[in-house]
Length: 231
Image (cartoon, rainbow, N blue to C red; front, top):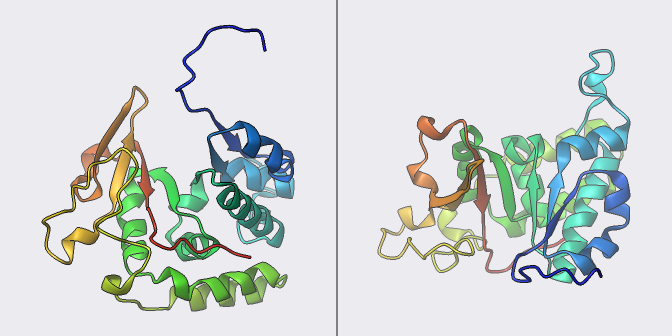
C-alpha cells in the first residue's frame, strides 16, 4: 500500500497459534502463501491453560474436542484453498498423534530432530485411507475416555508400507531432488526431511539424520498421491 519496492517472489506465510487466527482463517488464506499451526500456544490459549503453572498444567490436553476441531478445521480449509499447511509444536512430534493428524489430512510436520525417526516409522507403516473414518469419529466424540479408546484403536493398526498410497518414490519435498530413484523397493520409501538451522536451511534425506543434529529443528514433508481430507 505504501508502494515500497520489495522482492515479490518471497513467499509470505503465517503462524496460526491463537483461536482468533483459526476462526478468521479465510482472511489469512486470501493473503498468505502457506500456514503453520503452532500447537503449543494454540492449545494453551484455546483451553486458557498456562503450561508453566503447575496447578493447572495437567489440564493441557491436545485431545480436547475444541483443540481437535480447530486443528482439523485449519487443515481442511487450507487444503480446500490450496494453501500448504504444516504443524509445529509438541503435537507434531508426538508419535501417538501422528496417525490422527494424517487422518485429518496433515502432510507436513515440523519437529525437533530427535523425534524424526519415530514419527517417520509411524508414517511409513500407516495406510492413510484407513484412518479417515476413525479420525471423523474422534472429531464427533466429546467423551475423553472414548477419544483415548479411538486413538488407541487407530495406533494399533498394522499396515504394510509397500501399500501406503500416501508415499511415493515419485513425490518428494518441494525443492528437493528425487533422490529416491534407483534405491531398492524398501529403502525408496524413506521420507525426505528438511533440517532447519537457525542460520539457514539445508535439505538432506531423513535417513542421514544422526544424534549430531539433535539440536536442530527438523521437518518431515510428504507429498501424497491422494491426500485425504476430513469432510
